[in-house]
Length: 125
Image (cartoon, rainbow, N blue to C red):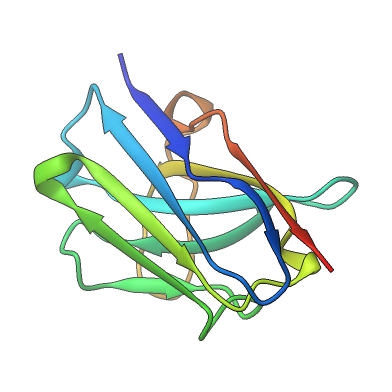
């Protein structure tokens, strides 16, 4: 059974940092790309970032470029999202998912069975 479990969310002040983790099991983690998405109340889901299995190819959405860094540790079957310079606009539920990450975007190829349940991030002003 594929499982992705996000952690590390919480409440942080504007300008602060958070590090999200995505612990994966049930599939060949080191063969697959991982992405982070987010969804704020009343807003469409947004692709934040992805990293390919090669640990080299990455993609960042324009709204987080230069502030967020994605990484992965294949030995631990875990992906991370380091978030800095957080603003209230970053408040959302953050999800990790298995995707295709061609470098120019995020392709949600595998569907809901390859998504985690999310972790809440709240940035206070």
